[in-house]
Length: 66
Image (cartoon, rainbow, N blue to C red; front, top):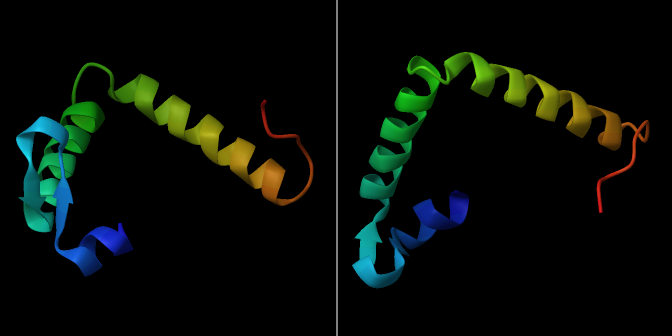
């Protein structure tokens, strides 16, 4: 994300270059849909499980998947 801010744009494949503020706006819209839509509960569960996994790996309590 910092690289995106620093460069000021991102290439979106066949859509071509897009300014960074447009990328962040698209990301915000996607997150609003996921967090407030019918999949919000599943998203929260997945995020919580991912956070627990990252914490375990960073503390050396678990192994990263292959």
